[in-house]
Length: 285
Image 1 (tube, one colour):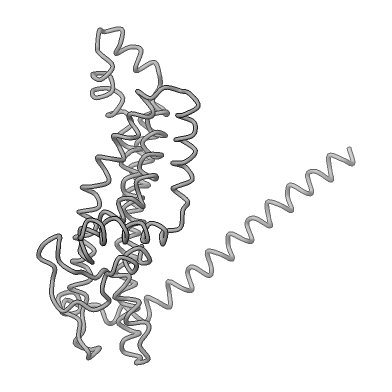
Image 2: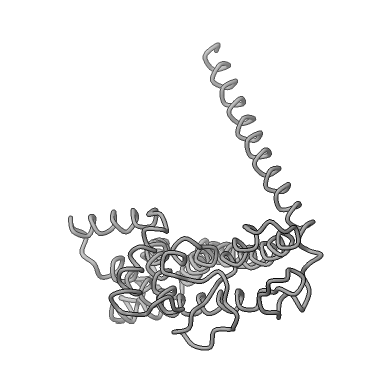
């Protein structure tokens, strides 16, 4: 009886400790976001979004930064999504379960945790120097595609694993081939989980700066990129450029840029959460 009371006391202590830590972290996050909103909301207007960078803080905008971010996001998605989803489908549905497959799985999981700057060095050597892409949007997109590929593969595999085997067996029982079963049954059932992985991986790519700095992305670009081979900047780099300047007005610009970047990331993560919940309800049903 005494042991039971001691264990229960420990459980309650751990519960309240975890609750306290959570409240503390959320409080710090709210304070940080609140300060950013106070400093940056007053600077956000149509001119700020549609103006080019300038030496004068009051005339400087994020046009080149957000268009560069949009370019990078679209190109990265075009490169990474087909490769990541196809690799996940092959490994889960067609790959043999042997020692080699286990080694590949372990390495893919480990690659998802590799620091992003390592991918920047890899992109610098392969895409910038070997393929002569230079510091272009295409080099940045390929580098970020390498960064998010492990996440996409793992997310695709986990979504496929969650599909009940009874669905596959029913399809085979109706005379469908393996590919027909995957295309018409398994993939639609796993689409919510796959989309969640895609959105979360792209939201990570939006906030990455280190790989793009390594491959030669610029902090100041006086024109909007028109093709994948143009030089570029992105929102995180523009924010860093402003934050590193001593003038208070540029710090206000940086806060405004952070607000916009947070809005994009929170929106993408919100869509991912919605799709995940909808997919889980569909699977449970």
